[in-house]
Amino acid sequence: MMQARQLLESHVAEFAATQATKKDIIKMREALELEKKSIDESGNDHVADKLFHLAIAEATQNSVLVDLVKNLWDRRENSPMWKQLHIHITDQAYRKKWLVDHEHILLAIQQKKAGPARLAMWQHLENVKDTLMELSEHQSAHFDGYLFSTNPVQLKDS
Image 1 (tube, rainbow, N blue to C red):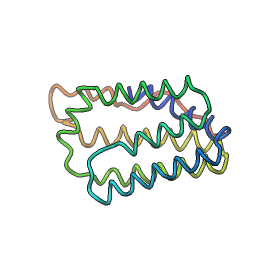
Image 2: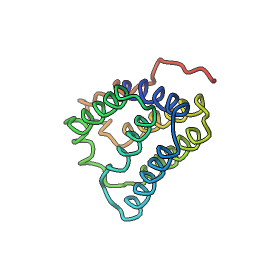
Image 3: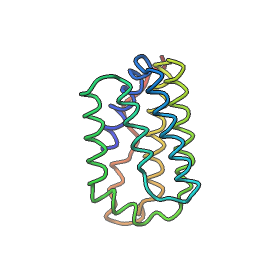
Image 4: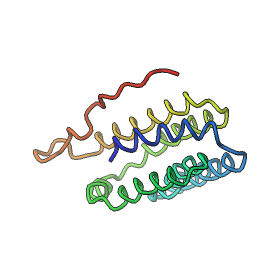
C-alpha cells in the first residue's frame, strides 16, 4: 500500500503543480491549518492529513486520479495492519514532522515547481514509511518488516 501511494501520489503532486488553481491552493492551506489545530489540541485523528492529500489530487483537475487517491486512503483506513499499528502509537510527535513535509509539498505546488513537488511528496511518504517502521513492533518474530524495506525505485532529479 505504501509503495503504491508513493508511486502514485508523488506523480499526482507533480501534475498538481502544473494544474493547481488559487482555489486549490487555498483548500490545501485550509487542510494544513486544520492539521496544525489537530496536532496542537493533541487530537489523534488524521482527517486533515487525508484532506490535504485529497486536495492535491483534486488540484490535478482529473477525477480518475482523485478516485485512485481516495481508493488508497480507503484501503489504508480499512487495513487491519494500519488499525493495529495505531493502537500502539501514543507519541504523536511524528505528526509535526509530517506537517513540515506537507508544507514543503504545498510550497512546491504553489510555486508551480512540478519536479520539486514530486520529490517532496516522495520524501514525505518515505518519511511515513520510516516512521511506521520505528513505531511498529519490529522486534516481534512475526513482524513483516520486509514490506517497508528500501524501495528499489530510484528518482531522478528534475
